[in-house]
Image (cartoon, rainbow, N blue to C red):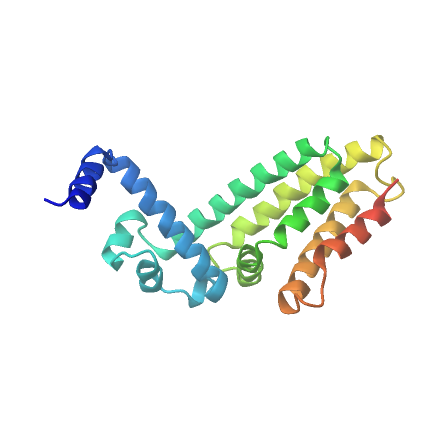
Length: 209
């Protein structure tokens, strides 16, 4: 046996084998990432399970072993994105000393670095306007939940005189969401012309107390 072959064999023997749970978790993570990419490109209705399985290096039966259907997989993708976004928002608020406007600007700046995820969100939101879309209720509840959280943040910022108080927190939140969503669509269509983060900063400066 050559020295190189011997070294490779010993390396393989010394490398701990992953447990079944670790392999399952790795497979699910790869599936969710592949589904995220597919949904971002083709939407829910245009994506086929066979395409996701191929991207995840699985057979379609192998994919169905982890996720029984496309709707179930879509909801897992959305829940995962929500979890990551919530953690990022909490982290951003802590980093900015709970200064709401600065945290919002930093979040939009981050979104400019992940166009695929921004496209995923906007494409699925547009599809989910239809009442028979599987994510219809998900996005209604998400907007309601996020508005409520943001209203609390705006009220605190108004009390601290960081945000203008001549407009109600409820109205400001709806306008901020409209600004964010509208900017994302225009930026996705013309990223070379639309500076999403800078335009959002202009909007936030108009809201300062």
